[in-house]
Image 1 (cartoon, rainbow over the protein chains, first blue to last red):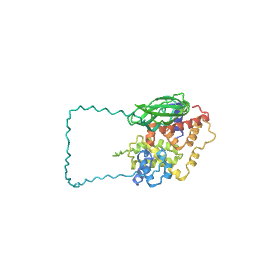
Image 2 (tube, chains in turn blue, green; image 1 turned 90 degrees about the vertical axis):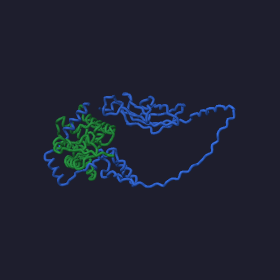
Image 3 (cartoon, each protein chain N blue to C red; image 1 turned 120 degrees about the vertical axis):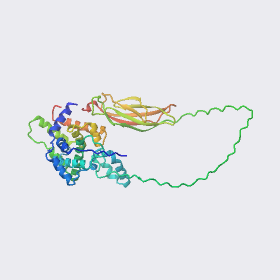
Image 4 (cartoon, chains in turn brown, orange; image 1 turned 90 degrees about the horizontal axis):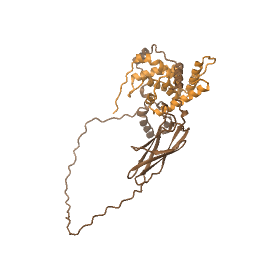
Length: 245
Length: 167
């Protein structure tokens, strides 16, 4: 923890004006006895964003009222209108009723077969099919990075992201054998992405990298040597000095 | 299938040990000290009457966010938030003590931060909440909290350096 953090922590403690707890518990009990329910959790916005934001958005789309709503749906849940409840889902619990099904009448079809006749002539072995050249290259989709901004700081910076994961989905008619990643900008380099559900690469800028953008170019290849069209994504790098912690 | 989790709150213990700090935090975030006390009490009642369905790691942080959102929503409706912040951030003249000057600078800088940064900085520095806990509580990524906290620190540090304090 840095000296700045200590200074801020101490200063926050001094400028804060603590509430007086005297009589508060009794006052709250009296309000509860009178039926006062206060600010319900459902309108808090605390942790609510994960649960009902998307149903709310879907409802907004259906109702055609997206225009103003999207502008207010920031990342912080406190910016989301508070009075909308998630749609409820009802589950049918009754026992299913069996419905008699019609009885099928089986039919039998007889197909005459012809026995092969031995002619005594040797039969040439069929030639294996000629190999079809793989001329179809891989495709890339969904190139992304998370986070979009990293710091060129060392690992002693607990509050500053120092690694950005570059990921992309690669497909091929046979198989993708590798994805090359190269980058230019305030830092240059190249490497091989790691396979998985998607191909990934952990980018950790050098501590000497200055502030600026780094653009990544991703190219997949298959066993036949075909390559994909390049996909790109960009990460903003902040110099080590930008991370104050 | 969603499992409902009932979170119990020991009212007497919370009021005695957490309430003072939570009111202070909401006061810093919103700039409305009196409104903070009312909002915190409303949030406590709400927590007891309809507890959150998800597990809550830190009830004090939960109450802080709920109460500060409530105050801010009320101010938005009234269009008076900036007036209250300006009033709270007013610097008294004639202070002599260096620590007091530093505190006034911190308070002024804090009041000039965007609300989200003010909220994250207060949760972190006053309520000692970790980045992980703040992120989970606010329903945002840790990266978002880090970014907000980084910007808040940067703004506060710049203000302190400008005032020539040794930080």
